[in-house]
Length: 387
Image 1 (cartoon, rainbow, N blue to C red):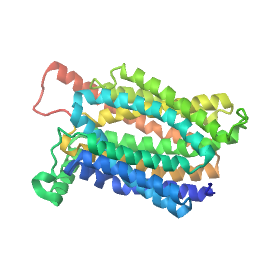
Image 2 (cartoon, rainbow, N blue to C red):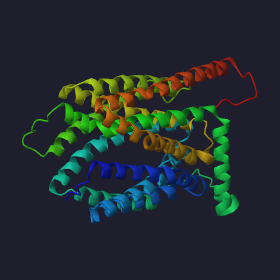
Image 3 (cartoon, helix red, strand yellow):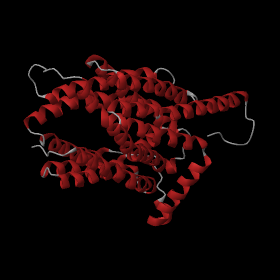
Image 4 (cartoon, rainbow, N blue to C red):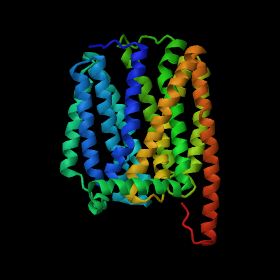
């Protein structure tokens, strides 16, 4: 069943989702730090299941908006808590490699999921949502039975419910004030979110505006978009593997150096996508943009987690997700207006240009990391602990 949303309603759906994430991200991160990462993750997947089932039940605008709120709330319960739980269980020295491996597995699973979802959607558009809801319920139950939490010390156990939340919030604010690196990462993540939102909103319209998609063996047009989307995921898994062999997550300067390279490549490729007109070039540049974006996420997570106090880990990671949503909510509509007034091509170019400040910040952060690394190799020069 098709809902038949107009462009404004599509933008409204996206705004409700990102706005809900923006509001609930940090409070749910505080819950994970104050009480239990495990509990937060399980609750999050259960709420995500409800969102999918709500969408599948009655496909109209209001139910879709309600589903977006459930999705946002469920995502924020898992965001930060999941990464913090992994870091607690495996330790800071190993967490980068785990993030890289999980990113590869996630991209390969998404590759398979695209074709399963499209196959189900060809039968009925509601079936993928219903199946996803059931699978998330199963995952929540599986984690309830088998998910362990061995190395977490909840703040709430010391000061009670509100005391734990207060302590966690105060400690998180202190961590951000005390570490310049966190300020750098927050700014970079917000810029990434703003730029990628422009690409994510506009690439289908740009593709359809530049070329006529040929019939693919008489199959549904959904298959075309499945083929296009799947290539980026496969390429992303490959690039993520290469990134893991470069020391990107195992050295002090690795994250900033790698992110600077990925961001420079992403900027160039976004411009190429904006100004190309052939189907082959559009598909290839789309694949590269998606691959670079997915490959950068585990490196960003490693950069954020480096030296982070475990007691505020989930909250600080959630603040970065909130920064990403803030970039999307504030910059996405602006790019949409620019693209409407000028052209989609021009809007995409503006989104690519937005990455330039992030590249400058990464270069500065890289120089700072190199200086700290050199000071450490020469021996302690002060009583301060480098962040």
